[in-house]
Image 1: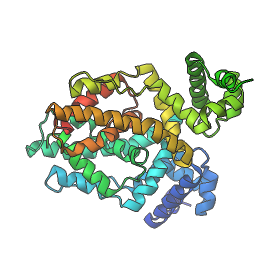
Image 2: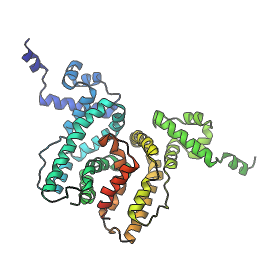
Image 3: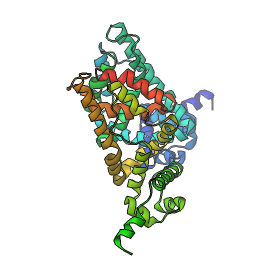
Length: 195
Length: 195
């Protein structure tokens, strides 16, 4: 078998990839990160462990890519206003997925601190791209004169967004929703940025 | 034995209470909420389970009171300005305790959602008194003319504060500190309130 054939064989289709990610998130919700094994993922998805390791390297990266797949980080949000861009960010994920992910993120928050591999993958594939996307959105708002270049709240936009998402349940006994996050952005994030 | 003697005997001194709470938080950091048993608390503190149940009713209330003991919710913060009051709130807890509690809160966040008793006690003894204290601080700021009575960010102050505390580690790989929270308040919370 030539090398090209090997590569072709090991490549998976986008549909199959989506199916795998859905199964990983399902397992993650059922048993949590620490109890999740590559064996269980292989069994649930009827794939070989070798394929999983070859495609993703390990559990941490597989889990983080599955998370990222569900909430795509698109660099093409550009509505022409800061408020429009923020609202578009919230609308990337519908309420049903947001509630599911909220439960998932609670479980992951603990795992993140005990698993350096997971924290590294999470930062590389979720936090850094989100930060980059936000930086771009804020840069355009500065260029349009909507916010001042030296506004110190710019450094805290991710804390404000992820923070509100994370504590909604504890503070209000309600799940985070698009409506909640949108009104939080209008009441808190935009005024803090002086927009 | 008269009833009065029984009551006297079952009452514990403030020093003993502080000792008990410290032991509960220590155990909580070691094993987490779900694995924490009243037997373990009794053994660690050399007290009887009967005393623990009589004083606190159960594990959820004992854990929440221990948390609250470490970060007293005082209603007497009144420095004369909103900024002063917010900074005083941050200074209730030093950096060392804040870092310890940050680890603890991560573990509790998951437990809160799976244990209705814990969530109820947490809301009754932590969230509601904090909300009450904040409402009082904001009411005085409105009276002084520092913020407008109808500013919608008032409803989100707790989300902003707890949120920043909760996500600092994931976003920056740094523990929450007094300096971080103080600069977050100055950059985000006060401007969002229009102060």
